[in-house]
Length: 330
Ligand SMILES: NC(=O)c1ccc[n+]([C@@H]2O[C@H](COP(=O)([O-])OP(=O)(O)OC[C@H]3O[C@@H](n4cnc5c(N)ncnc54)[C@H](O)[C@@H]3O)[C@@H](O)[C@H]2O)c1
Image (cartoon, rainbow, N blue to C red):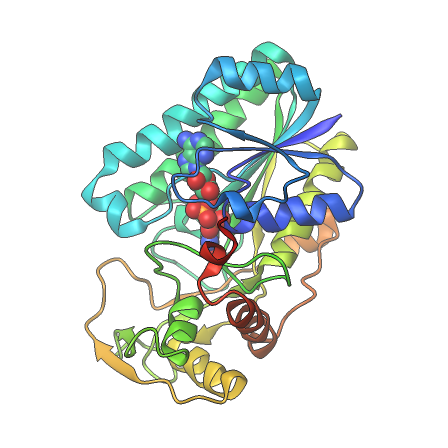
């Protein structure tokens, strides 16, 4: 039996493929490479280039590889773009997922792990955020993920597909083999490291008058290997008969933009120029996870808690792959 990884040529999916293989599982990847990289998937992993909404292709993959469960990473994930072009997000993140789920229901694949997000909570009403926090997304990206969570609940009732929705906070860091290569890049740590490398003149700080210690926004950074391990634990939970549920994945520690820049200067031993810019609409001041439920139910414990360690792993990957996956293109 194999595990189908949608979006396995992307950042978190590729690290999870690596983690599954270390754990003796057989991952099979489907990715249309719209955002991902063929080189992010090892040559000896079964790879199918295509859309998750291509029902005939998905049916063939399920049959050919005897798919037992799906880990669903594929999505568009740019908040700003989702505001400008919501249709693109609802089509790719919701409608394509629905097509995938219909094929799973018809094929009897009954275990599903979903990449959800803290963006489903919207503007925080209290901190740290637990799973009972109201879900009122502030943008179409967050809505697209919340719609899928609701669809999954209905597909459990109607078709017996049990699912785990993992609400990640800010994924960061790298393994030796796999790292973050987005085009365009919008995540803070790779942007800070690009500035350290001199590929960008500076790093923008969006907002310096937030009600935080240093006035800049605070986020919860979680190492991508810890996310990968949470997926494996979620799979084991579903195999053991666990019911459909949602879990936050975060460290529970918040770091401000200035703290991240300072930590990166320490790790890289380079000066990073920061330029103050105005706040972006819809950016909350603080987003920190309460991940007690994942600790208790999935027995998940993040191994990397230190921001320096997270940045160090990303820095090592960027040093080894100066052009990201473009280095590996034959
Ligand atoms: N990176 C984060 O901090 C973060 C935080 C919360 C949630 N998430 C979610 O985690 C998931 C993975 O994030 P990531 O940073 O690895 O993203 P990514 O863009 O690196 O990976 C997504 C992959 O999905 C593929 N894809 C997109 N639409 C597809 C389709 N219709 N059919 C087939 N393949 C398709 C892309 O080519 C890409 O390889 C996403 O669902 C994202 O919303 C990410």
